[in-house]
Amino acid sequence: MNQASQNFGDKFEKLCQWAVQCEWDDIPDVVKQRALMLLCDDISAMLAGSVEPEVRKLRETVLSRSTSGDAVIFAKGLPTTDRISAAAVNALAGNWCELDGGFRRAVCHAGICTLPALLSEGQARSLTFAQLLRCVVLSYEIITRIAMAFKFDTMKVHSHAMWSSMGSAASVVLARNGTVNELVGAVTAAATTTPIGPRRHLMEGVLVRNCWASTGAVHGFFSADWSTSGIMGSSTSIPAVFMEILEAKMDTEALISQIGNEWSLNASYHKIYACCQHGHSSIEAVLEMLDLADDFPLTHEIAAIDVYTFPLALSLNNVKPPTTLGAKFSLPHMVAAALIYKTGGPRAFYQDTLSDPTVAKLREKVNLMPFDKSLTPPNDRPSKIVIKTYDGKIFEQECLSSQGGPDRPFSQDVVLNKINDLSAIDLPGLVHLAASFDMSQANRVGWKEIIKLIQEKPIHS
Image (tube, rainbow, N blue to C red; front, top):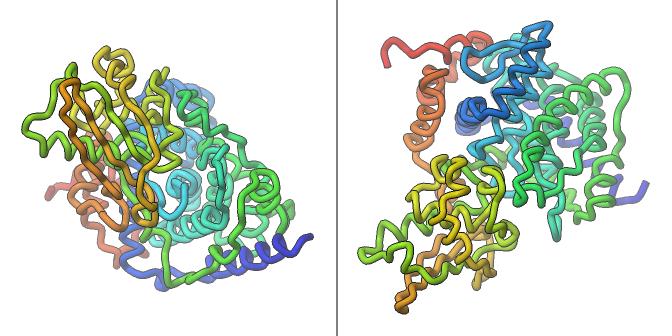
């Protein structure tokens, strides 16, 4: 064992020891509230994805062979199935529409990497809401700190594929009130099951990309079971996968730096644009430009659209996305659709936008170029849009950091409106839970009771 792997293993064990020992009362109130909002936001994203035809067909297939029902699938009627199948379907639905939240300090959607498995296991074990939210906080902390510990010169594997197995394993062990040894063993074992999901599949619109978080949820359950049985990874497992195989640089200090003082949920972000977050600053710049320019050109007057942005966004360069998934990872489509439909919401990524001739023409006019200023957090995901017309006019707008993250958070009303828009029909109580749950009651109410509550519209609302 080399020194770097030993150092990683030692610090990772300290992280897991802290997580196992951290109690509900040790978590700051603001972090508990962010955990609640993450939970409700990601459930609303699962509902949004549940109506997509592919997701609906898979759900029907799973339910047709269901033999037990200890966990819900977040779809109309909240059908139940076994916990592993429910987690797999919810993970698929939750990232389908690109409306689940993310983490700003690393490329990691920690919610979709942890919540599907946790929600199923939590219901099956009849956790209290406090126990569930504690696991939300701590599994989020574990997987984001692992993600921050590895830096990639070029990301070849997508983040959902890299982090979901380990995040799910952590959430399941925590929900089972496992030991430090079981937590370390499960997460290190899960690392070796990491799917090699090609990042290029995003831009190519290959739908299996939406399954990687689902695969990770399943791996998390098995890894937790293995660990309890004495089948574990080792201190070398995580570095072997991410440093030796995937060639990342490793920063072991990220695992424990300011642990218990700096909470990863405080660096989470919410999304109102239904696409990859790397394009949100471009969409925001386009929408601001439309609002500010009195003499904005007609579509046929636009000669070129220059987009100056950061390296990861530059890779989203497909001008002919073949599927709606491809459109959500096509910066030319994001910009063109925002110009035509004046939104970055779901309407800009419907199936009909792929063949819209006006959108298609504008996509061809988008040129992607490196941003011309230094990139330092929180302004490390910027965009500058320069639109040139055939008669020589120039329109320019810059967004250094898109809304939704800790530096420019959405107001609570914006997030609540999003949750309500996505859940009002099937789970009318979800937005009420997000807006007004009394945390002092979290130890007195069970997760199963919460599920019943969010199915019903509150009488006084």
